Amino acid sequence: MSNDLEELTKLNKDYVDSVQNCDVKRFDEILAADFFCSNPDKSLVDRAAFLQQTAKPIAIKNLRAHDVKIRVLGDFAIIHAATSYTMPDGKQAEGRYTDCWARQNGTWLAVSAHVSR
Image 1 (tube, rainbow, N blue to C red):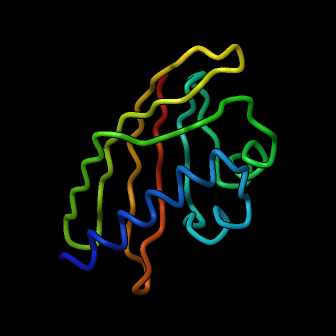
Image 2: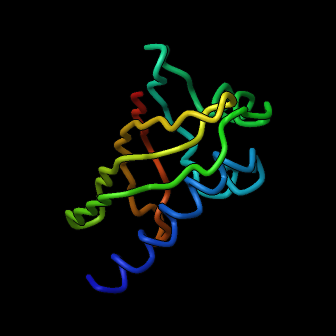
């Protein structure tokens, strides 16, 4: 299980970094084919729509995850975390996210995400 925790810790960092850097290529590698995301605006987007929204530049800076809790339940894992970031006007803001991961054919892939601000 420690290897799973190490791998999921790295994948969580990759996920957050990919949001900040609009890294569609990395998301394409780590999202399951049936991935869905609940956005802060209450919209639900599938993988294709998520990749499209990821490609658009974001205005926030210094996105960081804090208080990360990773629970491994066999071939399924849930990651809960808080976020902090800087808004375009320089003000600090916070949010939370929950990502669900499933091991598919030996590889951890994100299957679901929920983001709130």
